[in-house]
Amino acid sequence: MIKNIKIGDSARLSKVMSEEDVYEFSKISGDFNPVHIDAEAAKNTRFGKRICHGILVASLISAVIGMQLPGQGAIYLEQSLKFVKPVYIGDMVTATVKVMKIEGKILFLETVIVNQDNAEVILGNAKVMLDE
Image (cartoon, rainbow, N blue to C red; front, side):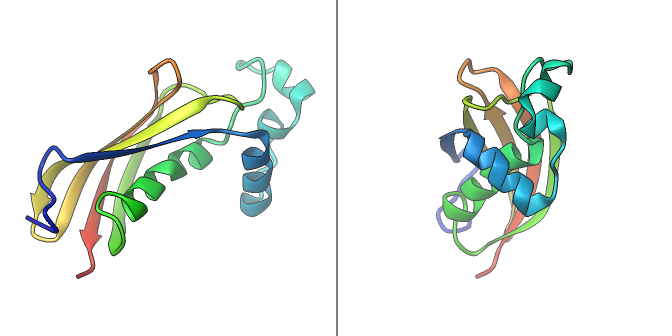
């Protein structure tokens, strides 16, 4: 057992995805795809309006891992992601990380992000190591 962490432990973080988040992420990442930043262009897409960058939303998983479970000292080794549904500007999303397996200093985590309707928007798995 690591730092009193056991299989089944979980932690979560919720956030409203704002227009400012999308613009700041566009500047940081260089991804200015019109589906994210141009309301007129986004109207003509399959989504019908602007959506948040998938990786921006997925970064909440990193926040949970780095700040809560396992927290400081966690080193990301792997992360798989499946983008199930779009996240729109103004959506409230909740990222949950759950410990599925422990091998020495390695944690295997289930990662799920849901929207305000509790619909899954991003699914994945992570592998992290504690640097102790």
